[in-house]
Image (tube, rainbow, N blue to C red; front, side):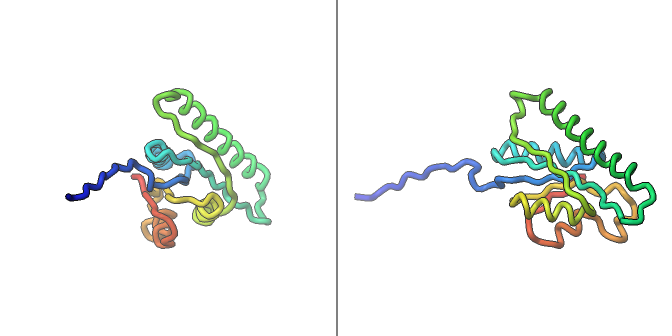
Length: 153
């Protein structure tokens, strides 16, 4: 008599539980957010949208206006995300949070990914020509080798 083992199919339980995506309002970052949202929805993961506000140097002559501007950018991003979420409610249901960190984009995303215990990081490809020479945030995140990183064009 042979013993048969029943094989059970397991659906999507080994994927990421927290997906961090960097957003700054650029087209590339918004495409990255859309991609990360789909990934989070399919994996039933938390989508953590992260905006890194530039750190101000102590000697910045226009410190207050710059700080107010970065706060306005963060508020505008939250409004855009809420509006997009309402438009697709029921079709595209995903748990999400919005976080702001201060600093340079690389350090801010590293801190966010560490603090939020990210399983995956998604960023948009750099739209600045100089990053081809110096290196972009995406390249630095990949080289860090701490999380799977997806770069969305």
